[in-house]
Image (cartoon, rainbow, N blue to C red):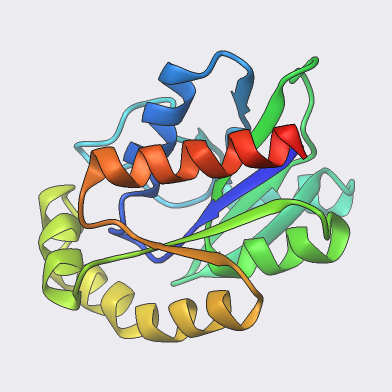
Length: 178
């Protein structure tokens, strides 16, 4: 099964997905590629960091399940390899989720929403986004959320981390038992 966890920047995708991976050994995180600079607070393994040229070569080779340009940088999810018998979880943006839905229409599609724009801004600043980058992310967030809803995502407001993780885990368990 492919599980898509998406939402705008600062919604807590990475934190929720990390908790899910830690709690469930049958989940496998597909590591996305990015051409943007790594934030000071970001783990080295948060992405596979590549140059624009490396990214474009991988696109030309058909190596991505989905990819998109966002705020001047490329992000992409390679076709899952190494998952063995585990379910694949993707932590991606709404643009990428739309592409995955086209290729894997039966994926579990979860849209995380921030409790408010103010909380989202606080999270973005807390993770080290420069103020102008945080403002740009917040400006596009409403359109991203609207698009995720339009695409039929299961929406969860991430206002309580433990509850959010439990809700996503319950959705995964429900899908596995179906």
